[in-house]
Image (tube, rainbow, N blue to C red):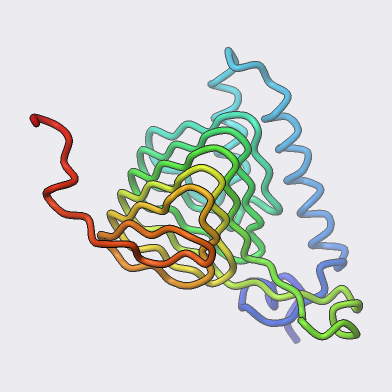
Length: 193
């Protein structure tokens, strides 16, 4: 028989009030609190908390205050990761960020969901689907990424977007719901113009 944590990480319906999951969230909340309470001058300590909290951390990362995560151990960040103020990651399922990912302020990545039917939803059961962000991705301010979404390499998500479906590589996408606006081309280069 699967534990509630195993159900959670496999995308099955699970009980988030399970004592082990509750303990895991409390541990993450303590680390979130420590991270967010440290002054900017304590960057080394903040980085150590991030390494303790996240499942995998690449080289050269910078996360500004404030940060909130559900569990932490389901988050993987690649090399050269930058997240601006007010990053929220509900990592009930795996959340993977590739290399050279830049996240603007007030962004959220939400793997958790709840049944649509009220009686089922009121049982406090939920599900979680993974989120994958490719390499060289820029996420604009106020973007919200929903459960099960993959964003391809070299893509830009415009500010204020709600990403409910996969977005391919090499595009600019924007809106609610987020849709591909156009491909990124040589015309987008601003250096040496």
